[in-house]
Length: 147
Image (cartoon, rainbow, N blue to C red; front, side, top):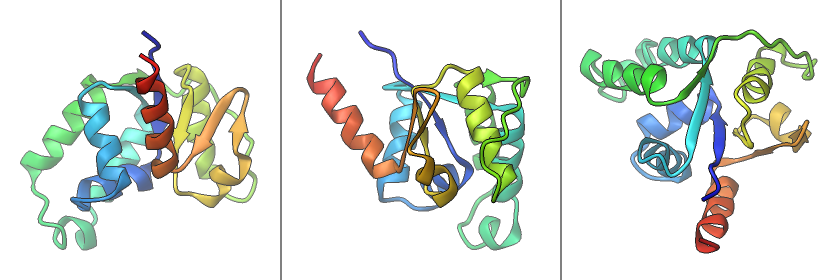
């Protein structure tokens, strides 16, 4: 059985939490079911949790500390957690996006799932495919049908 590892960027992850429908939500559900293994890092987790605590998200989408604690447990215990050892500088226009590439390389990910144009425009880096959530679901579907 082929094991698939993927980094989920902050925007895709947060979209999957706050929107009950759509590709980002499906990606998170499949990660939780371990259909593929989510790869993350300490800095990515901090960013996700910080964004979820922003008033315009926390209040608007009815989040609470129990929900966020559950998300934090998944991020720190249900993923392949890297420790930000690798530092790549590939994206010059938005250097903050480099943490997803660094994490993917350190965590030996096959994919980065993103809606960010800076990442998506790369298409791939060092053998890691960079795709949006919808495309990732299609790829996953094809892989699972082969089994």
